[in-house]
Length: 519
Image (cartoon, rainbow, N blue to C red; front, top):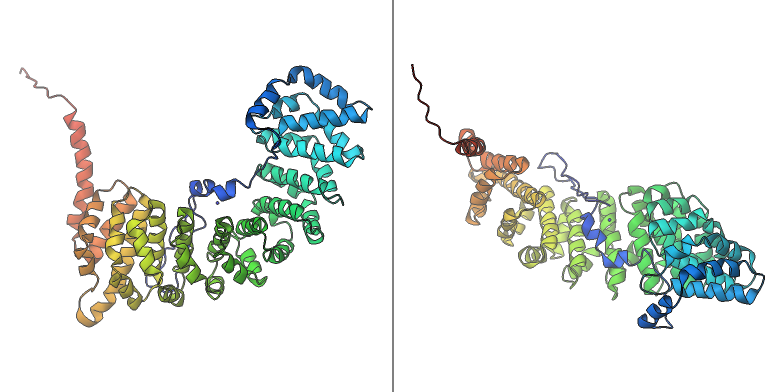
């Protein structure tokens, strides 16, 4: 989720029953704050054999300025024991939890020597220790991580993840995962190599659980770079993920779902590929997984898929996703409730039968309850879900929503300071009133006007004539003119009044001056 991209409503006929209002993403800051996602970008292997207090003592007793010269000399020695000893010492320094001296090590210019050693030496332990050092350097800043690329570490790491040793390939793929998790710049560099093909090949061959966990995590980080992945055969990635998704390991499942969520974001072609792979039932099952680390990206993936066309949305509904979403609306985690509402909003933006399926699943009473009592972020998404249903819904479906007492709950959000949500509510109210106009054919009366007036809606909409946002002002005027019989002349006064008040404020700031003109 780099984006604050809720798509604007399509400017189509309000009575078009198949209009679909789609939003590409949830608010950017909320995506960035998802702990489940951010914690997986980079991982540092810690020095677990000593406590934090001993770590500080260990570093304080190491004179880096003096030792850096010794490091270089000992790395160049022909004495294998001394070389291995200094490499282990460097690894321990970089494995501490607090303020590891990554920059000091880089400034000592020993990184090229270490990369040469891992490539040329034959001892597996020495190679493993250097791979560990590279992993921890890659857990540093972007500038520090990019030094690994500049020093030629990538081809070496890719080479060694294809080895037969039990530990070295896992450590090398961990290092590559940290590099992939660092930045778009690093991912683009990695995707310009043969890393994806090598990873997929090794995932197919390797039964080592540690390697598989690290490899799938690295693949998921690479999938963040959606634009670049278009140049790679996405079908190969989807094919492999469709097998891994049946794993029983929570770590693997978590990263498989994150990978799917990244590649499915905004691409109808990839969405169709995921549907064709036969994964939808399994993804839906994972919505009910006991581990919220799995639930969260599975939900994000489902949410992305239902931003597709009506056929793609229906494919998800056919997997019995709606009962799962109802359960998630009652989650203890705000982020899950919010994304469940977001997913539902893209289902209710569908056709009449998809809105009816949502009604039949008894989801709307819970949405209205969330409008009343949940956190503001959740309320906003619940409002979208209800408002979207008013766009494509029939009169009987609108009657259902009104009988659930949804109008008062929606109207309360007109007091919000969020411009976007006010516009969403106003459009929902307009949609309801537009459907109500159909009843004039039978009794010359819009059946929904009274419901909105009784809930205090008329007063709230009138107050919005004074709103500083022109779009909200214009929407309020439009509703009042169209449905409440207000005259143009009367409605134009508030905006003129606002301008006149500003002029009066300016005039009031000018001191009175009494001039006497002598003729």
